[in-house]
Length: 302
Image 1 (tube, rainbow, N blue to C red):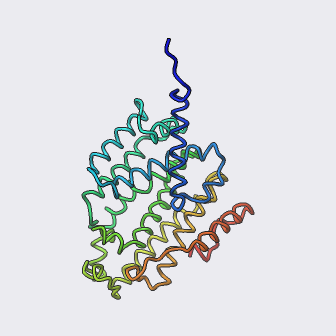
Image 2 (image 1 turned 90 degrees about the vertical axis):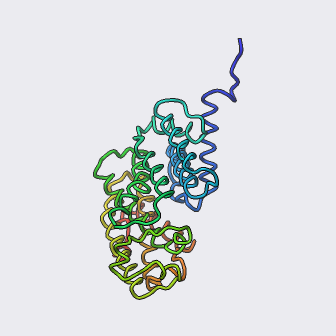
Image 3 (image 1 turned 45 degrees about the vertical axis):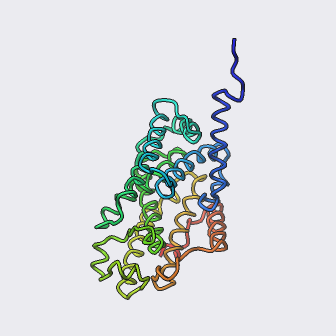
């Protein structure tokens, strides 16, 4: 009778799959929260496939040189196999164990795929409401996935997470107005641009007109308000998750302050945090969490 070698057993295949996810996360450490490395190994094991899924779908939507629509269709097929079948891609072999263990709804993964499909056909957003709906697909599902990993199923906490994740996505858009324009996209709502007298040519010419600066000030202020709405999540999640949640909020708010510090001119140069600034935020989040202090100083929340 033929025997199955250990190397080809289902358990070995799963271990190899988790290793592939971990390798991907570590190869993109700049996008993988440093605080996550402080988590227990049992949780890190399952954060890796979630990260691999998110990273993979983003790469297909933004960088894949072949048929992106077909590639995203395959990503969806593998996702659905996690719930009713046997996936074949290593990331999804690992993800299947994770979604089963933590009962993560499939709709969260499908929303991320849909966000990347939209990126293939939508280059402008007429109103803020459409942009928020995009964030509900591109950013909010990630926060909810992480809450499931920490055992949080309370809808109230998921809503707080949505505020924070949307704010983070918008902050990234305001950082990258010029980069996105080079890629053919404008995420600034067209109605807002009209209200402040900003046309696309100003962005194309990298001219931060007075109207453009007022527009960015407006977007920064309402994005900060979203961070404020989501801020209570920092103290309501389990202690193991507090550093990560605090760090994401602190990082987003710090970028908004960086935009303000350069007089809202995000066209001349991209506002970003230095490695030293990021290290200070991590130290602050860790220390304040360990001491049981309010997660963020009021000076940062604004």
